[in-house]
Length: 291
Image 1 (spheres, rainbow, N blue to C red):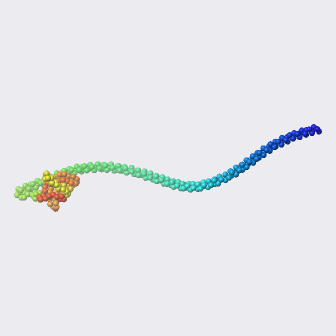
Image 2 (cartoon, rainbow, N blue to C red):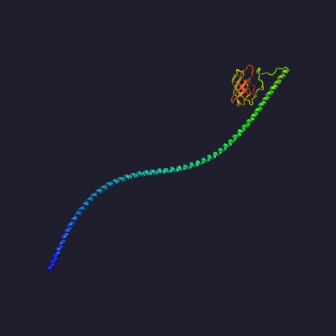
Image 3 (cartoon, rainbow, N blue to C red):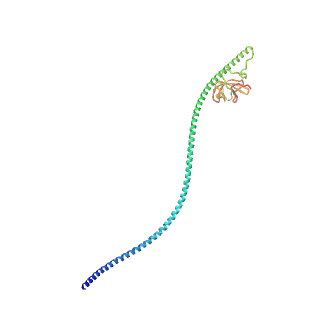
């Protein structure tokens, strides 16, 4: 019994010590827990305040984002319009490009055709030029032949005319001598105003032509009368050609050409009708014509 009491007392002492220890531990842990709870509450309150600030900030950002979204939607609408316009312009440009390609192809075809045509024309022109050159050479050769033949013919005709004039002069001389022998008057001469025959001191013109006296001049030193007439080598006038001056039906004088040009000649008076003078405007002919 006594032993049990001691054991119980000892057990009670141990329990008291353990209870004291637990009490002390509880007191220490309770202070820590209170501090942690207060710290956590302060942190929670700070977090709530921060959350409220974040929520307000988020609300502001949301409003800004909504405004930005609306602005972007407006810009997207404008960009859509611009895109549609750009697409339309692109379609027009594509159409123009296709048209330009067709026109370019057509222009190339026309250029090719023009080049081929120009090549053909060039070949034709070259052939024509060669033909014309040959024709020109042939024409020049023919002209030279004609000129030579004409010169020979003119020389022959001039000689024939000179011989004819000589024969006629000889016949007139014979007739004059015969008339003298027979005691009859001779043929009228230039001093009586009649038309004398050629004296043989010049060349008769090949073709008939007529002109006029432009100017009459007299050389004081030699006493020779020179006449400028408006016929020249274009009218077959040559040096020593005999010309006849008339005024109406009246024979005025005979001229012998001493200088020629294309459109005029200078002649010397070889015979002059009695009482007559050569005047500007008098008719000049290659043959005497009765009127």
